[in-house]
Image (spheres, rainbow, N blue to C red):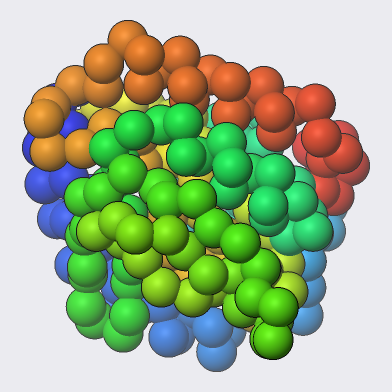
Length: 211
């Protein structure tokens, strides 16, 4: 699938889903950004049983669950999750993806940045993780990341491959999708994504085995 098509498809869905994000936060279960209970997991599995698979932020309001809680209930064929303590290991892996699409959702705003993932280093004076020079740059707070999930799922517009970082409330901070503006991810990008997927598979699983 062309990355441009991915961006367009995601954007169309985002514009309808983002408006419900605040409502999802208000109606989220007591698990917040934690692991889904058996009952919550059953609701999530039922939602994902048929048809194209939505990303958690697209159905959080409908399910009344936080995004991280939804992600924790997905079958391992669709998503693998690790604790936020593995931020640096995951981040270093993303640097091998080449040009990527970084997605930031803020209120009703959808921001897309096409950039390689820069290397970074922890600040010696604060809790920030300072990113190197790239179109996507800045200062992150890994200590506030509670969960990280990688996704590989068939959406309405084709295959979606990416990683989302979640804060303690269970809402996403930002996502990174393989491939940039140039179209279908190149073979080396898909290979790099596969390495990141295997990294998640080999790290201790967040919430243990999927329900």
